[in-house]
Image (tube, rainbow, N blue to C red; front, side, top):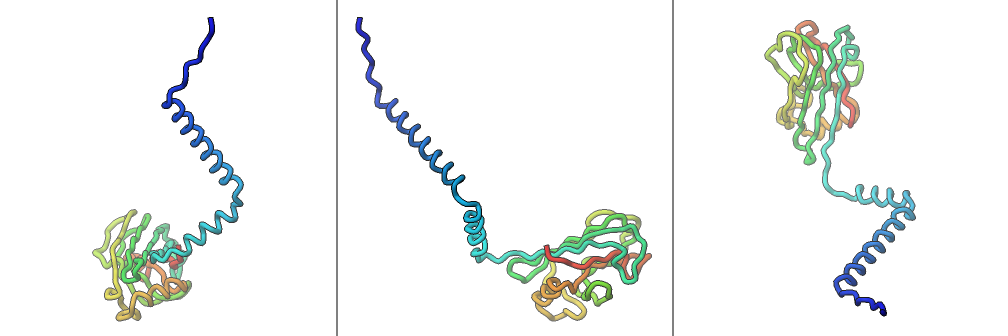
Length: 190
């Protein structure tokens, strides 16, 4: 008895060819991935990201503690204020959170450097008095230059941004026990 081989169908030939093509593509891409210098990949990626023309939002944060007040106090309260300037530079979104603070009356952005008191330029919270001890979001909202007060009243948003970028703004939360401010923190770029 002689053994004869059955001819392969075209379907199985096509499947075999497709599998071979996939294996070649995977092998080539693996070779390229591992043989391309990482410095070339990261510099190309950095150039692509840098060439993006879309404006980006600017973010600043102030971590508030009692020891930053002028003069300092011994309150255990802490907090943070985050401001985000819109990509078009026309508005500011803020979120102010506090921890273990009692009888809050006001919260603002003040204009001055670390260690010196300054004028209010943006209001975050104007009352009513938040009676009792509070932890959580004290205030959040949106501001335009039309809302500026004090020395920035009538100025464009870009003036506030310049002061934020140069460390000339701080967040301050006032209470009934510390009317000039219980916790304070200078804004830094994020």
